[in-house]
Image 1 (cartoon, rainbow, N blue to C red):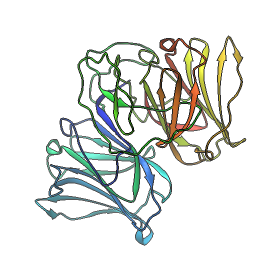
Image 2: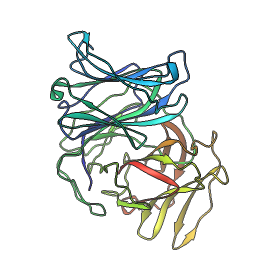
Image 3: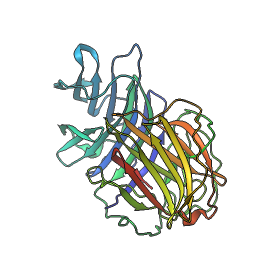
Length: 355
């Protein structure tokens, strides 16, 4: 089952960050925070769900601390005063490593997952529907903060295509062959638009309108492997795709394919046995010439989480991994709308897919 998107994501927000949660917290809202813990003089970071931007009223303070072996402090602040701390003497984050942190709002509590595994539950101390702001501070670099409404009626079953009267703006996702590092400018979030028929020039950190169809997202726990789904509307300039997951410790290979019928328009294939990321196209059952060169070292690491962003442009796909531009891949199949299926397979566990 696919779930509707509650609001556009924030892309590469600069820390410290504070952003509006459109419509406030609601039962079933899932917030995904994807980033990397930095090696720095700071030994903490925090994610706060607050009432207003001032920080005097924080419904949920999630605060990993790397001192004393590592633990996570959770608390609530009302009118400037902290309540009793709840401490979980376990540290699911590692300095220098990427992470995917998911908060699922439920009627009685927050459900917190780290890298696809349940980490803790935090019971509400104040009405969660009053929360309208998320802030992040400390020793982290963020790739994105995204929002999905898991209680909404399914926007479409997998493998089907349907258009919607309302479309949201979403950040671009890179795919491709030649690197141009994306800027980490101030993130911005755009309001939901009724109809978008014009194109917007891309600038770092800006949201991009999806001119045709709202993206599909999928719930965390149910990702059969290999995973197949449709890409609503196929590819077109500014169309974005996100695939996040965790690489198995003994991984040899995995791949992400963008398909047009039986053809594979784009094959992204990290190979740990060769320490290379292969890109290629398969037409009429025949593979073309491989592209293997990268501007930097292998961005995928066994046992660690990852996030691949793919953005379609008129002449190429741009690919970023964990918020860092990796490559460009020039279109070999030119009928972009016909590239309308996604396949993910190999030695990974999926945690998030958005098409």
